[in-house]
Length: 390
Image 1 (cartoon, rainbow, N blue to C red):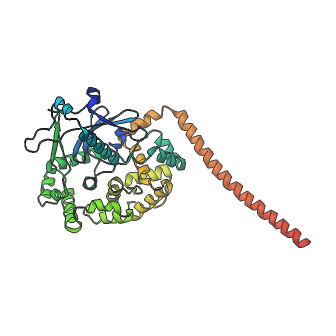
Image 2 (tube, helix red, strand yellow; image 1 turned 135 degrees about the vertical axis):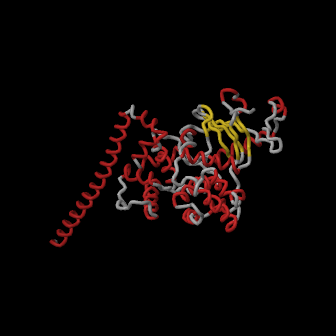
Image 3 (cartoon, rainbow, N blue to C red; image 1 turned 60 degrees about the horizontal axis):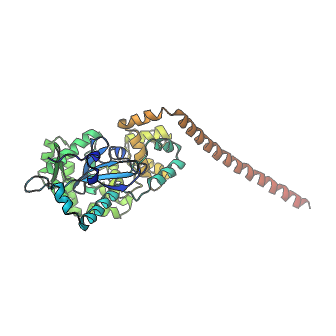
C-alpha cells in the first residue's frame, strides 16, 4: 500500500519551486474556505487533487516542495507506482518535460505570477487596519481553481460551515468522481464531470448522502449548463467582464450573488470580485465603521453591491484578494495567530501611533491648503484695492 509522502523520509523524490512563505502560506491558503479538498496529512504536509492528480505539498522558508502520486490502474484497481529502481532506469528528457508541466500547473493553481508582497504593501499603505492584520496573516493567496469544481463546491456552502462543506464535497467525489489512488487508508477521487452531475439519478443519490435541498441544485445546474450553454461555457466566462460573468452564474439554480462572486474570484480570474455574506458585512461595520445600509436587516442586492464597491474603492483591482486576508483572519481556527501577536503590544502601539500621525498629517495638509488658499485670496483682494486707489 502506498503511503502519504513525507519530505523528511525521501527528499530526493520531491520536486520544488522557488516561493517564499511571504508569497504563499499553505496552512492559511488551503484552509481558509476557498477550497474544500485539501487535508493536512502530516505536520506541514497538505494532500489534495489538482488537475486529476493527487499531490502532497509542503514548504520551507523560500521553497514550495511537491510530490505527485501515480493514478491507480482503472482495470486492476492498484496504484501504478513502480519500484524505485525501475523509475531510476527510465529517467529521460520526458521526465524533465513532465516536471515543467507539473511546475506550471502549480504556478497556475496558486497564481504565482501575482506578486503578493507588492499587493500587501499597496493595501497596507491605503488601509491601516489591513496593515495590522497583514503583519500576522502573510501569504494568503487566491487560488485559480477548476471552474466546475469551484461552482459545484460552493453550491454546497448554502447555510453551511467549512468542516461540514468539506465532508459534503468529499462524499460527492467519492460517489460520483473517478478513483485516482489510495494512500494509507484514504481513497482519493477526481471531481465529478458535468455530464455525471447532470444525470437524472444524481439528485436522489445525493439526498441519500445528506445533501438535502442542495442535491436538486447540483443536478439541475449541471443539466442547465449542458442543455443551454455547453460543456465549455464555464471556462469561457474567464474571458468576459466580471459583471457579465456574475450575472450569467446567477441564472443557475442555487447560485445567488455571494456564490457567484466566490466562483468569479476563485476560478474565473475576476480579482475585483468581493464575496459578501453576513460575516463580511460585520467586518465592514466593525473594523471600517461602515454605516451605509444601517437600517437594513438582511443582505439585499444593494448591500452586496455597496459593500463590494466600498472595498473596491479602498483596495483597487485586487480587492477580492485583500478581502480574503481579512476573512481568513476572522476565522475561529486561526485565532491562535492573533493571540500570539498580542504578546507584542509595543509593535501594535507603534503601528497605531503611525496611523494617527498619517491621519494628523492629512488633516494638517488639508487645513494648510485651506489657509494658504484663504491667504492668497486676501492678498489678491488687497492688490485689487491698491490698483483701484491708484
